[in-house]
Amino acid sequence: MFLHVSPSLNALPIGMNNFLKEFQDVFPKNVPHKLPYMRGIEYQIYLTLRATLPNRAAYRANPKEAKEIQRKVGKLIKKGWVRECISPCAMPLILVPKNDGTWRICTDCRPINKITALIPYSDDLLNELHGSIIFSKIHLRNGYRQIRTKFGLYEWLVMPFGLTNAPNTLMK
Image 1 (spheres, rainbow, N blue to C red):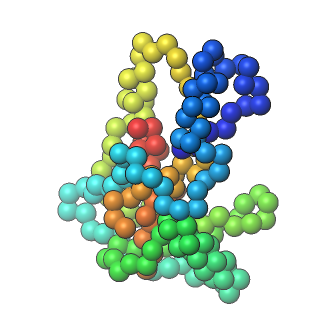
Image 2: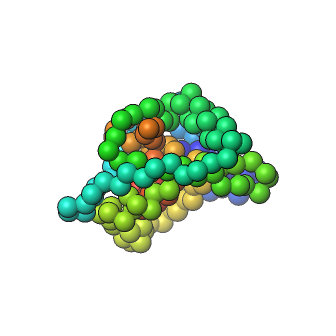
């Protein structure tokens, strides 16, 4: 989890500054370039009954895109977020342009999302806040890649963007 506190710490409730200072190791300023800590939550994909695992071929990429994909995957391997694997389930990567002209690597999760059993909606989790007095909002920078997957082409060892139940897992 990564915390960004506004420059005006004086706007925080009394005692919150001390709390943030005491637990500053829990809220580092930068995303560590390694596999995240075990947090008691592991992302798992539960499939619907009689589901057939999707096995999609990689999308075509021109030489420039292929080189960028290799570079991005190399960085993910170095961070320990993905590893090579042999699996009957495969989903293709796609490069998506960012506003600054760089590329974001994404996984096309649509085939696996179609056969994923849903977990409770975040609305149900929010109902558990009824009666609470103090509320906080935390922006999770790279939050989707901060929950380890149970299982170690390449397979994600951290929860990627695009999976049906990922937002609800983050709410836990």
